Image 1 (cartoon, protein in one colour):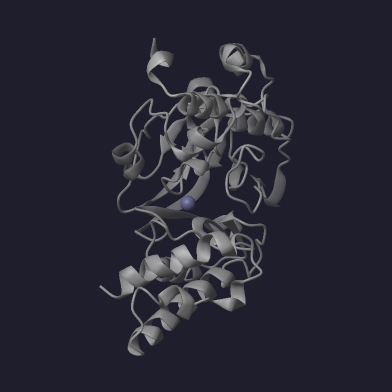
Image 2 (cartoon, helix red, strand yellow):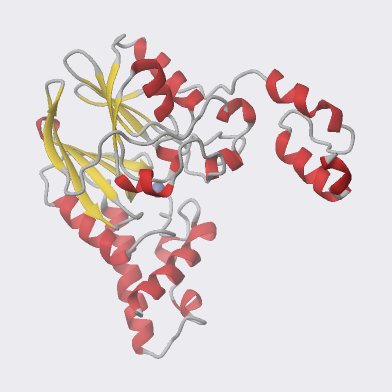
Length: 325
Ligand SMILES: [Zn+2]
């Protein structure tokens, strides 16, 4: 009945969205329901990398989320505590989280007691329901997740982008606990500082400091090797957050996206936002308005970084709106 009222073009579009194993939409309307469930679970081939004492991370590609990478383009980490694991971000899907845990359980087969989240963008926390359902982990994260997402919602960026065999099992659930002002706490024997920075890269960002290891988990307040996404961000908020990060004594920093984790890990972000701010203010002084700002501030120092073409002009125009207010 529904098909009768849809145009052939719409049916093709729906079929294209639903099918992952067949490329032509014309001959497969009947196969939709069959092929949806018959594909094998997506294999992320996750390999944990030890970054510090008792800390391992999974590093994602410097890319936008696609069917091919199945959202494996953000970083998430495991901290081995006294008798459990503590997680920093849970990745883009249930399947990712399940496979990350399988890889970590070869190092030590411990339950996951606690999940701590950097921010509300869904490439960083859609693994939550795996850790809740299988480990009954406590979920600590920004309140913005509970405000801006509905339990059971299925139209976020990852749901729209990933193949069925990667997003299957994923459910949006709310966090159990949030800390508007941040918190210093001891979780299963590990001292942690969860630092609130407000609107930096997203509506509500946090970074986490592990003083014993002189380690920062920066979330998306730091990216390296690629251009950041400032679509929900604030240049001034980012710069403030980077100052807060650099006021801590750290030797290792895990970016939200990117592979550099040594003392230089945050430099690109500091440079990018400083130049963005200075050059936009300079252009404004010279009378350039919103119609000319993207051309006037190309930030050519960053032109060889991944995702420059996709994101730089959007970032500059968003930053102009903020700074010209
Ligand atoms: Zn983000």
